[in-house]
Length: 352
Image 1 (cartoon, rainbow, N blue to C red):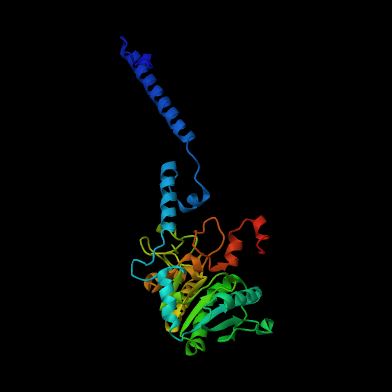
Image 2: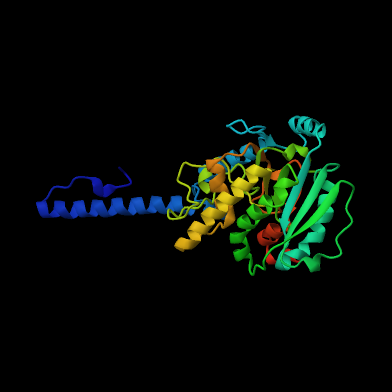
């Protein structure tokens, strides 16, 4: 009470009492304002990553969130909740899977699009695949391109490795390519790929294999985890939120967020997936619906409806980024996405 001498009740008329009450209210308001200002002054601003994810501003909440994400990323789960293997290349399960498939004569296709300026990535893609993609196995590379002559002369390949050119119509602009890719993949798998190989994997050409990618990746329907979103809370996933889109994902749906850099499986499964996604894209185009995630959004919508039977860890799709998860080994690096994630001054250092 010594701090508030005016709180002492004074004798006098009702008019004096009203003035005292007004003064008390003013003092109370100033006290609340002062204390609130003090709390605001000691707050620490939220880093951009958490600001973009819409997470809590408070220091305590941010510390808990950072620790939770870190723990989830460090925990190398070997299986999804629905029982599909979650593949880490050096795990004992992967060693067993490589041995199992090594006893079979499996023929696998690796399909990529080399159109327009992307054809310049092809030599690096193929040379790295020769070293690291299913080493020792029978592989056919299928190159979808709008300019077959620019790929000549074709590179020399190891025994049991073949390369086939699949001509496609010219596609101008990456956005147009992204919206047409699923239809092109479905068409190529229907004829000739599914008549020639058992498994097929679709990979972006602006990537480089930097460590062995073996038979542990083979499965009925295979998806790859997005390295920047692995271990993140589900509300942070950039699913399509436009209700009018065929790729729309409701709150509460979804398990992981998958990248479009690498996916595959048995030819009939991959054909069904590519055809379904191309039909969804066509439906949205006819209705004039545009989405930000392009084909990756439709791919994630499909994997919610039809969960993968094999999920590859971020080792199989990685790029240098402030958000990328730490992994035991980097096996397939996306040069294109890495360039997008780097600051302008660092892009030249990485040959972007």
